[in-house]
Image (tube, rainbow, N blue to C red; front, side, top):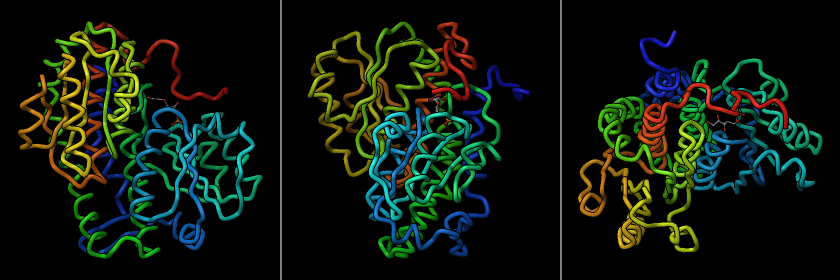
Length: 366
Ligand code: F6R
């Protein structure tokens, strides 16, 4: 059942080339300019004319929502807010008929997300679901939606569901952007072609596994970790930190790299591993300075960089090279080494990675 892997989590990490492909299948074919999702088409006018998109979710799904905020605002130019479902539902939120509320949930059963959705529905908003489990409560409660075709996710720590969610959200941002005319045809085509290459680039990133085992050996006894990223990689930093906390029980925090100097920099010393996601994108120069700031305080830098980069490797203690892609799609690649890092550290610490203590796969109570 684990397909020769030691744990479901590892199997699911390695399934990502396939689950990402399955989540785009039938929805996008770059060669023939095909880009269509039934759930969006049904509500096309609502999406095109939306005042605002509010995304509600918890945990890893909330991180996928943060990636979508960058995607939708950039490609479709609609204001997006990403809310923890538990906070949103008790805040007496302001909502109306021109708002679209998107709930993201792997299980489709998360109590707070479901309640947030019901509340939004009662206020007249259009509600849209992105779920992995077919026929789940959230999927049934929505006006329309799109499934992630990740297949069953058994490991409690979410991995392939996250990349499937980001894939679907990317397609949604591209579709709305093209319908609204905010995403030019040439740019849209480029993104479609690039998105089609992602499964094979994820496959390449998975070949880093052995290298990551070695890095894990060196840091498995750390008591704290910091994860830094900017732009599209900021949510990835949060996700990397969450994965490590959940399964290895090492305290970890994810931060937007520029926020470091507003507090967490005080934590940095020679004992502190700092994972920096520093791929070649529009914030690259800025993150180079952030790496310098960490090194000046003797922090240990584990950098995730774009293949061929020479600047960061000259400063970092460890360099993990991933393939180049558009910054819009980078989270699909940059999260892979972080999933592997948390997995190997947890295994080395003797933790039960598929069933971490105190956690449940689906949180059906608030
Ligand atoms: C993280 C994790 C949790 C879930 C969260 C939401 O690895 O598994 O943080 O992401 O409980 O669950 P869903 O997506 O089922 O609503």
